[in-house]
Image (cartoon, rainbow, N blue to C red):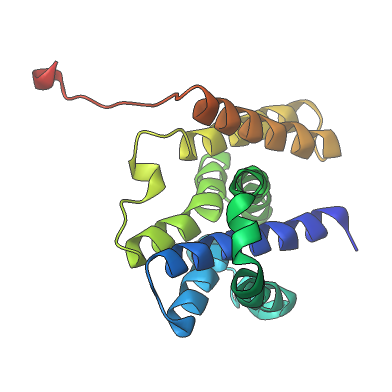
Length: 204
């Protein structure tokens, strides 16, 4: 199995677990948990594919993604206490996921001939909009609308990728370095409570 494909599937599983855990904390039933897990895992990629005109969308052409998503249900049902104890690990893998999905979404958009600016935006959409849909369904303020550094970490990683592509197009090191940038920024922002506050001029 291709390494990137394997990590992509694993990131999809982690996002699905994140959605299912959120649903259980909100006392959703089995169907509700399945739906929230599904949209968390594939919502961003689906939105990206629709926006760039790549249909049928990715998961419809590879049912392994659906299998991985629904694997999250029994995992959370039987091992919920272990998963909750491993929340830090889940956070780490979730961070890997957004880094990977940012770059994969960016690459897929570039391959359609769209501009780097649009590709960068689609990379962020791929990474974070599944979480946005999850939070909306769970009646929470989406994470990207709070002060946490989240989407901006994806933007930074995407810009690093575009810059490195100008120097050496198609090199695997470009993907690795860009994902590491996302992971590092996201990790440091949580560890040291970095934020991007916004205060209108009249409130200062």
